[in-house]
Length: 79
Image 1 (cartoon, one colour):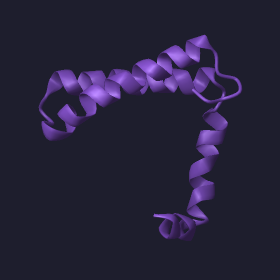
Image 2 (cartoon, helix red, strand yellow):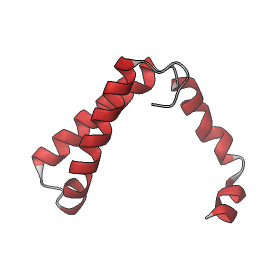
Image 3 (cartoon, helix red, strand yellow):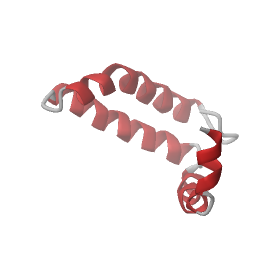
Image 4 (tube, one colour):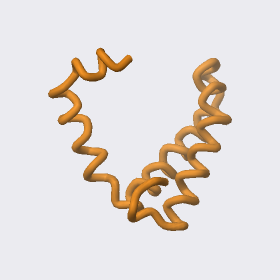
């Protein structure tokens, strides 16, 4: 949603994913057998992935994990 390459398409998918996550993540967490909540979370993951891809942030997102692993102490001191 904040990428310089974000567009109306990526924003639409990102916002839809966020709305689904806010609504269904607590339900899926509290009741793992809730098929509707789990299905909606799967759809939210798909929408978030489409948003990432269309906003051209996939490479940066992918690089953040290995780089972050090199500096674990930073996260420990911040939180």
